[in-house]
Length: 162
Image (cartoon, rainbow, N blue to C red):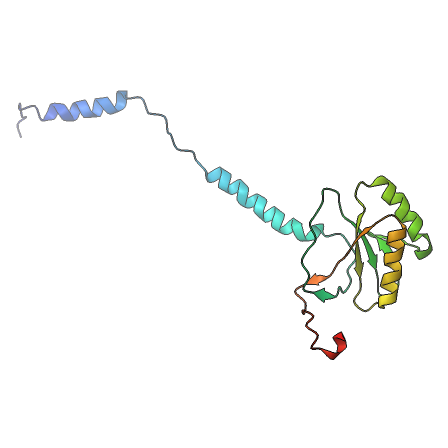
């Protein structure tokens, strides 16, 4: 139980003192955990809010295999033709007789003359064409027909297609 004079006890003592006296080196790594937490919260918020941002009145759109039109910087103007024949601009009901006048007023305030027409699939083709004529007379030359994507492709084999 005697102490050793060989010097083995001294290095241990020096090591302990040098740790206490040493200044901690700055950490060179970035802690990304808070960043990941914020990004996950934002992702969840946008996933929940995105479906709520669709503008329009619920109708049964016809299904086609057409691709989407390129977007623009202005909020798209949408006219909806309901199954009962009622016409709506965005979510506001409009008298069909006053449709052209309202569209001309709106067209004067907009830079782009693009408009989207949403029509129920059960509406007669002639009625849809009448509304398209009113859109054109109202000052909108670029008319996009809105459909549900993923529908059947036209191949001419169905007798109803002819």
